[in-house]
Length: 205
Image 1 (spheres, rainbow, N blue to C red):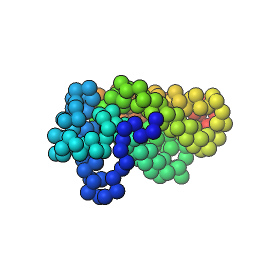
Image 2 (image 1 turned 120 degrees about the vertical axis):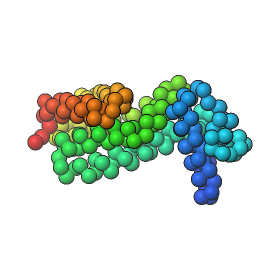
Image 3 (image 1 turned 60 degrees about the vertical axis):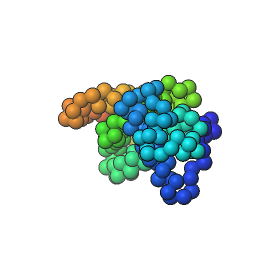
């Protein structure tokens, strides 16, 4: 997919800050109005830059969304990795809880992140990007959980991990509709369900 209209990242700190401001403005507008309702001019105005500045960094509106999705993916991976690393010494149940709670906390902290996923589904190239990123995460998660639970990392386990990942995303989106106390109860029920399924599959003590 190459860079999908995203220009080369600026090297100067000042230009990088301007790029970040454009992305932050676009993310805020997508969350508030929806992707289809905003224009490059709206993004430029919200970021307090000229339209030409936006076009110097992004060839079109979809390129901004592409960059936002790439940034979101990197943030999710970094956030999740830190939580999982901290949970590893506590055993696979703690790792399971940490992985699911990490995704919930990430989206609860910034609800606009989910708006990016919704927006990307209307752009075929970005829908493909999201799918490829999810496949990579599922493969990495299957390898990790196979190692910590002792369950063979075969096709059945990969399918289980994929199903759990999709279900977790759905549960989190549902939970975000409620206040944090109710949402935490929903998340906790989902975690216990996943742990029970792993135990049935032969996860170690």
